[in-house]
Structures are given as C-alpha cells and as structure tokens.
Length: 151
Image (tube, rainbow, N blue to C red; front, side):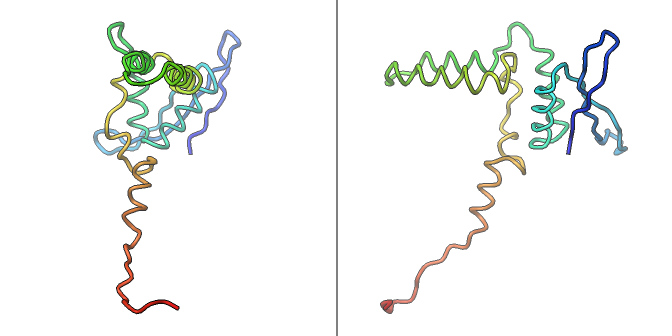
C-alpha cells in the first residue's frame, strides 16, 4: 500500500513524497518516488496507483504536469458536452453543471487532459467495472427444470 510521507523543504514548506517500487525494461526492481505539494494530491495519486497500477498512474501524472495549451481537459469537455445536450430541461442541465463543479473538478482537478483516459483504465483488474463483470460471470445460472409443482 502506497503512503505519502512528509518531507521538509529548505524554504520551510512541506512536500509529500510517495515511495514505490517498479520494474524497468530489463526486469530489475527499482525504487523511486513521486513528490507532491499537498497531501490531498498525494493521497489521490496513491489511490489511483492502487486501482490502475503504478505505471499507468505515472503516465497520467506526466500528462497532468505537461498539459499543453491546445489540449482539452476533462472538465472543459464535460462542460461543452453538457451545454450541447438537447432534450433536457434547464434544471437538469444546471444539476449536471453542479455535479461537475462540486464532485468531478475537485477530485480530478481542472488540468487533467482527456488524453489521460483510455479504455484500459475501466477494464483492468481492480476497477469497479471489471470486478462487477467478473462477479456476474462467476454466478451460476440456474433454472428450475423440475416440472412438479412446489408445495
């Protein structure tokens, strides 16, 4: 389990470091860490790494830190999508926007680009969708083939 550790900086502020192991291209185990300015961001990254793996979490963080000006973010895309929806009442649209502002933006941040998401995130072992699908596949399908009435 990944855990952020506080590290004092020379200027007196605190940085949060998350140490972890990974395997390089040659198969050797390496120790490294990711450093964050605030504790909440470090905890979110730890949770993401637990779900999608360290390699994918590092890729997503690299994309977050290197967001280009021309790259659309998740929050921007959701706002545009919500604005273009047809056949819904304005009250429903306002509810969607409130959901983006209150729940999605604080969790993912306003700079997460759409390119950080891919289909593999939702189909990997450990994700909610994958676990639900596997649980449904394990349940045996039974039918009552007995034609006699139950009493």
